[in-house]
Length: 543
Image 1 (cartoon, rainbow, N blue to C red):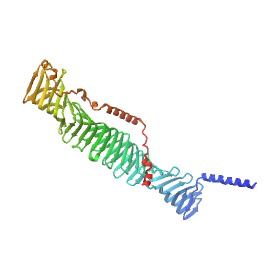
Image 2: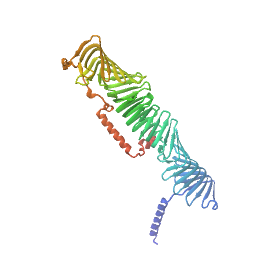
Image 3: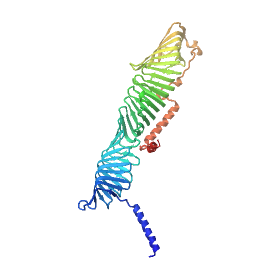
Image 4: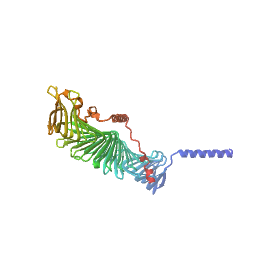
């Protein structure tokens, strides 16, 4: 054969053999053992290695007391004080282990313990796939990660991501709280937990439920979606999206927010809320409404912003900007409201107007006073420029009472006994039992007392310096039938709980409810892993 042709063929053969070897599995290398033996009867086709056995294979080191090495199969069985080490990322200890060099898979059992820089897993049997860098177990396991202890019946550990994944019942026990879920991803370096499906976080302070959420076990911060709520002894917080800071005892809720006060029998709704549990306060906006239940009736208070502060027995409700309120027998408007449960005093501040029965009441300052014992409305105080007006039941005129101040007493939720004090004036259409007009009473005195029954004035009593008379209808001209300052605002009257909301807030409400329903209709899928989780170690190195 030609020499040059021979060398070409030889070179090709070398290259091909190198390519074949590159694709073939690497062989297990025995680095050390105190003794080596072959026993074809007891262990056919295997080397028996005893005493300080050290084995190396493609970046891992296995040590043990005794081993059977099957060279043809590239397989080893290890006994006694077995440890498999992969760099500084994983340590696997057990009483017995098997390692397949061709498949690059390990099996460890008997007090098996896997250690990584951030966590330790103890269980009976552990499997390790080096190709996918996954550790998995199907026996009860306990994972210790600094402050947290995780227990589960099965699980997986993704070495590169430093992530434990549990698809059966898992419990995270922390000195402060306990997390339970059937589907949880836990990142051992950051302590970030991703919850999916019915999951709970229980502590002495509260109880959290979610079906899709995130919880940072180091910073004690949480974000919860999908049927989530936070429950305290006295409050239940619900919303499409909840944020929670355990350290500050702060929570915020977004879209379809509902906060139920079980002790004070009240509900606050809106589409954004902030709650500060330590100081017992909350702030609610976006179609905010406070609903208080009082003796088979409900009081609805709406403002662009609502604030509720103070503990039970000393709670204050504040409503700001374009406030409207409704109760079955009463409604009103003002710029803002300040209501104290301790004093049972509700102040209507800034251009207040009140409708009670068929009566429209206005004045500069208006106070509603309740009775904490009976839990009923007790009295009304109106100061400066008081004006009480109602439409005549049959005619087109108006019954009017005007004066400086008004002091009224309620009976079964309706104004019953009313005193108009100082510079009192009245125009009143008087009718007999047949509802025929007798005349128009126009009078001035220092004080007037009204007794109101069934939304109509039963009696009028004038005190001191009375000046006036009862005029036949034809003798009192139209301009004489109206007191100065009369402004009938019947078209503004709030007649239902829906009327307390302006059009733009109803439109916002419809939009957000529609968004919430669309979100609920979607298939529930696990929360996307956050960048702060994926980049946790990178940030750590930068610091």
